[in-house]
Structures are given as C-alpha cells and as structure tokens.
Image 1: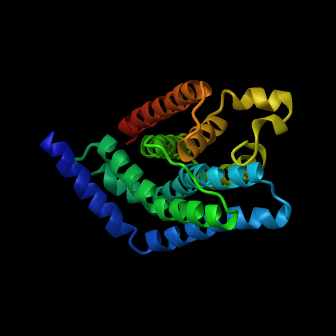
Image 2 (image 1 turned 90 degrees about the vertical axis):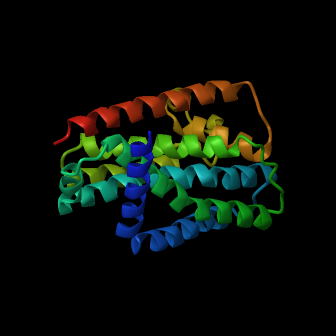
Length: 246
C-alpha cells in the first residue's frame, strides 16, 4: 500500500511538472469554454426562460468534463504516443494502473476552475440561485472518471493518432448538438432518446443537474447505475489494455 501511494504521488508530481506549461493554458481555455458556453448560447436564444437557463448553467459542468475527458485527454495521449512519452513511461518499473489514476487526477483538478466559474457566472447572469447537495462531489468525480476513461479507451484502442484526432473532433459536434446535456431529452426524436437511455451523456447531465439543484428523482438511481457501469467497463477495459501494451 505504501508503495502504491509513493508511486501515485511521484507520478502525479511528474505529470504536473511535465504539463506545467499546458495546465494553466488549459485551465484558461476551460474557463472561457464554460463561460462562453453559457453566455454564448444566450446570444443564440435571446429570450431565455428560467427552465432553459437552468439547463444551460447546470449542463455546463457535464459539458466541460465531457470535453476534457473525451476530447482533450485522447488528443494529449495521441501526442504522447507520437512523441514517445508512453514508451519511456512503460519502460519504468511502475504500475500502469497507478499512472492512470494519477493522470485522471490531473485532468479532474484542471477542469475544476472552469466548472466553478461557469456555475458562478451562469447563476449570476441568469439571476437564479443553485441549491447544491452533498452528492455534488461524488457525482463530479464519477462524471470526470467516466468521461476520461472513455477518452483513454478511444486513445488506446485506436492505433493511429490521425484517426484519434478525427474521432474526437467528431465527438465535439455530436456531444454539443445531439446529446441532451444542455436541453431536455424530450426535444430529440424518439429513436435518439432511446439511444441516449443507454449512452452515458444524458445520465451524467441528469445526475449533475440533480446535485446542483437539490432536486432528486427516482431516475437518479437508474442514471447512477448506468454511469457507474460505463465507468467500470471503461476503466477495466483501459486497465487491461495498459497492462498488455508493450
């Protein structure tokens, strides 16, 4: 156990030092993304009612974490694969699961400033207050880990870096327009609603929205089970791939 924590903190320190020039820029981009996501959508829809504003603001954390985990993380991994960073890491006598946990930690905390500012400015801009419950912390962790593990799966199951970039760019389009993160599920066609009942995006947003408004429903249990399943399957899949990767 002591060896695990020692490796974890050393790898965490190594990641922070390696990305020390990127993380501040990344945090600024996430802040701009979160604020732009909320305020910019208001320009598209100049007359926004309270329900729409609530969806915009409470959907921002899920949107940011999803963009980080499923777009930025695989793109960074593709760059590391091309530069040989992973070849160096895999040559060291360290646990690859510990490396994965340290990397997930870095991306989670890097996204927090954008989430906090997006919620603060969004609630002020649209003039309503949030009612956060204690589950906001585990829900945010769950959404972050799920999105990042799915991003890891994309990056390590696709061998070519160019294809990873194409897939992640396509995901930006799909998640922003066709995933009910910042609008109600009922606005989508029935067949797409059924698809999203299986995919994690709607359920991640639903859990996040409940933890930010204090409004809990019976569907939260189903959402928790579905997101947890996606998290476990993606984490185990990535762990197996990393253990076998030479």
